[in-house]
Image 1 (cartoon, one colour):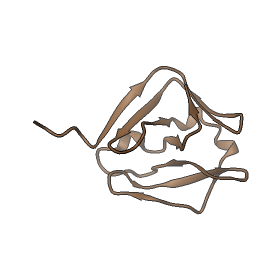
Image 2 (cartoon, one colour):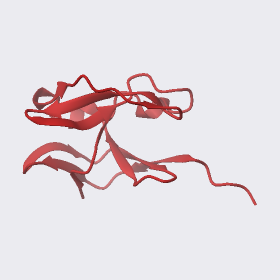
Image 3 (cartoon, one colour):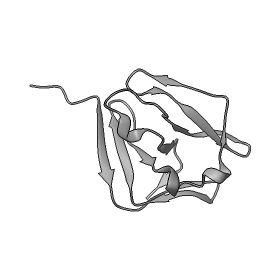
Image 4 (tube, one colour):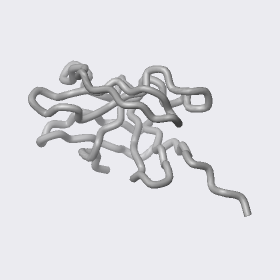
Length: 107
């Protein structure tokens, strides 16, 4: 029996939105749902569907050996609400530049 892949990517054509404190930050019918063992599914939004004008780059960075280094974003006083992999490792290129939110996503 083969092990399931550690990470799976699934294109999602249903509308997915991200709200932070009642403000609509992202609205898309073109997200990628990333499923990684041990973590909840995450929706990766194309930047053109995210209100990037409301987000600022924070000083926080993280590293995932399966995806690479992140750029993290804040919204006003709300620190580190979202992140992006600008240059992910080989095999994860489809998430490059997409923005994912911690827990503010709603369908």
